[in-house]
Image 1 (tube, helix red, strand yellow):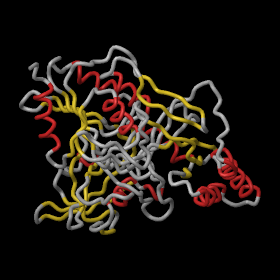
Image 2 (cartoon, one colour):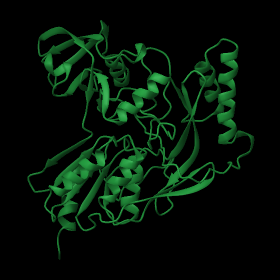
Image 3 (cartoon, rainbow, N blue to C red):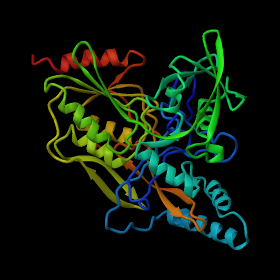
Image 4 (cartoon, rainbow, N blue to C red):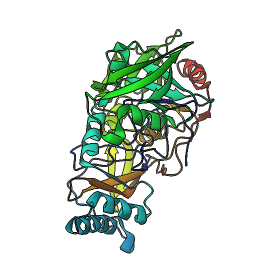
Length: 413
């Protein structure tokens, strides 16, 4: 399942392969992207949505109960993890790269969502989930004619300091033309992914505004970004856009609800949301539910469940907007609100990323991940490969449809 880049907005802070998968090892609970194509100049992804990282995978809180051995025979999750670890250990003993050996083993496993990350990449993943990244502060998209256009510049970023504006055309990165290239590759170049470029390194951009063409030499910096934005429409509806479930997202949503009149309708915009920390997604669900089931999942055959906290706002009119870029943790939240009858879901079928990955640390510090299970919505709907079907189909007019629906939901008659 692939999606085109054309016309989709991509956020530079979340460059390709910047999201960890399931990581009990990191002490966090999170969702991640589909397997990327490692190596090469750009580290492209299977999917590129509003967040370059694309489809978030799933990771869930770990209980004290040990996971049971999967009853899937010799190709079961435990066996696959052992095979990857063994390949890495043998490579190290032979003086070869454990990471490359692990990548080959993961590829042979046939696991669509399996991946291998270097130690530095994994650390950067964790930073990304904390809302931190290394870059220049540009949002960009590829137009239908192949041009790359800047759609937003983060205040206080190197790009903002250089006077780059939304609407500027990005023509080149470090002398290489970017027209026609997947936006994921362009963002990877801006971040310096291929060189693991740290803050302070330089990148030269070729830009155009109208008839003026010029170059800017920028220094990459450690930046932070807010994944939740709030705006109020003229009719009184509050739109809460969640780009990803990074640390603090749920608190930001609750703050927005607190500042919104009790009888005002809310649109929870999850379009293009590629996932993130599952704890943040569950906490967000808690803002709209009075306890109860959010999702069930299995790890090596052991069944577990996620529950919302009690005390959420269960009466406010609520619509959730979704599309093909709504993935993983965002799909879990959508499924919970839909199954529990809490929100009307409008848009198009979501991506369909409902599998759970577990990490294995390799001898050189790199991390391999393989699929160990899947999650389901409260009604038992399997999301992986199917997605969540909206209650009302809508395209570009989704927000207008949401306002209409909220008018009806808020009508006491």
